[in-house]
Image 1 (cartoon, rainbow, N blue to C red):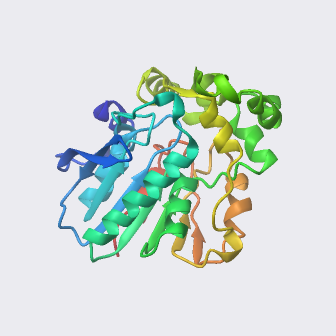
Image 2 (tube, rainbow, N blue to C red; image 1 turned 90 degrees about the vertical axis):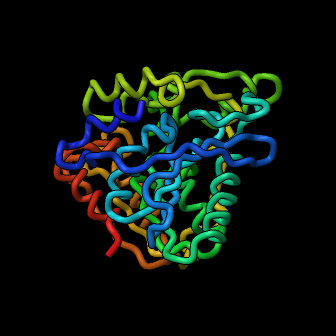
Image 3 (cartoon, rainbow, N blue to C red; image 1 turned 60 degrees about the vertical axis):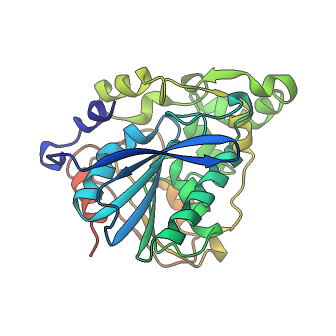
Length: 297
């Protein structure tokens, strides 16, 4: 699936030959977390990249390859329920598991790397990366394409397949408590997966990927996400430096929704619109601008 995603990047951004990519496994609380390591492990800068709903390491490959060719060693986990990660009980996966994996992996990478450490978050992974950056110590830079606060009613309406479903997400998902919490449903039933990209062909590739956008997740996972709140509120988040690289033509989660959270962050920060790019930012010139942000200076 890696090349199935990379081919949508502008031709000049497709790293040729592709950088080194190694599949590894990391044991976490009874789960075997699949972690791809891209580029030179001795590179001066290391980045941990987190996918969102509908993603996994293969979907992040185009951007991991870009960063690796620019001197960054990129670590990309498949978060529980996605990709090749194996968990004891898929029906028990919750959003808190994503945050705990992200924090534990970030801390582990900090212990083994003395240089700058970046966190990268795409889509829903933006908030995952924010949580890991603010809960752990030693992260130097946070680059996210989206900061969707599930407490924000407008954000819930945008994320859902239908606005009315987002508005009613809380009460509806509370009904799923108990035995129904483990029931697995396709992502497209509850979320606006058709908005994941502006290119219909790319949308079809994502939705056909059974390890990513064509995946099923337990109702309890969705409930736990919509009921979540960041451990560190943005007003007291004083580090690291935050870059919001939001696609300017995002038809799923408009930039205004991310800015509502971003504007409250106390840390040093910058907002970089990715011009003409959709939620999955493969269009020029936004894709080229994102490549610049993934380049150490």
